[in-house]
Length: 310
Length: 124
Image (cartoon, rainbow over all chains, first blue to last red; front, top):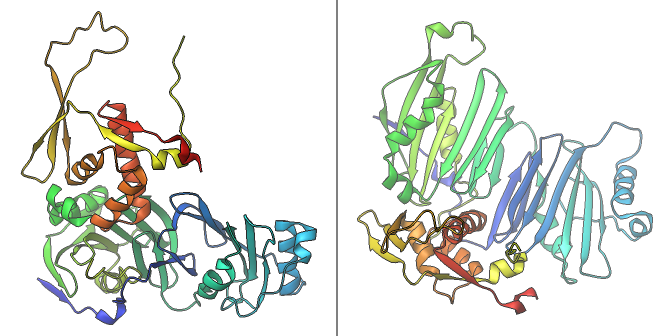
């Protein structure tokens, strides 16, 4: 039985504040808990996320890598604002100050006649991406300027990268890019890759009480590794004890000899299944070795603390 | 002439109140779910050809979440309230609760197990 020490300080055990964190492709934003991502497209270079509540769309987040040019950051932002809201409206836009960290050049347009669309555009100092927030304002509520923009930040490169969407949150080592995402009700999965030899997958299933009533954790793990059976041989399933989790199990997959032509694939894959009783979720992780698996396991759930007293 | 199903706006769909089929009977299961039995109705087309014996029942198995949503279909609780209740009870993200409950209610409606009470004033 393997034991892994888990740093409880990584998990934010603060009370539910009615907000949730969205961390995607290096951008982080805190939004009301009632807003959720209903559409996600693109990659690190360019993409968009549409956030909506039950009634209507509320916020659009869009990013695109700014082309190399001799223009200053302010000129690039102003040009983007003109393209977005038109020449006349862009003249009314103000250079937003202290609105968000890591965006030296930024512009904010607040439509004087709500319901309308407030637009903020900023040029990231870190990744040189143009980031745009479009907020559907129903009244003159100042949500974009005072509530959302102060929470927008870009993760600085070098360290691990944080991801959080819907109910799933994790930190992956630097250098890994998002390969695919499958966000179905009750079954969320993020897959990351750097090369064919290095792949990481984080899958969350909930509620765990129902999932475990259907089949035990070991069978969930078996279903997770079944997709690798053609090229990988499954090792023995061992129990895994991790602080903060009810129980867990792990397995190592070794590349089959007949898969010698697939030299680009990792020689082994470490897989584990964990039951997070506090958040009532099952976590299934895949990584190239136990060290990365440990790091992943410690970070899962960083943005969604278990609710206490509800 | 073909009868068109009335289409609902998103607002109306959220404020609609689902109502259980009165003839449907529930048998609780040990797993926490339940077995739902409802009388079979002859198909609209070909009912004269495919005769259903009197008293024939069709059964559906509901898991714990399905049973919870079914119990909420009392004609007083709106779809929006069901989504919020589901999210709170099982600690689900609101989007997950919305998608799963709407899909389940749609299935129940297609099977003829629930009806929807729609308030015209919900357009606001």
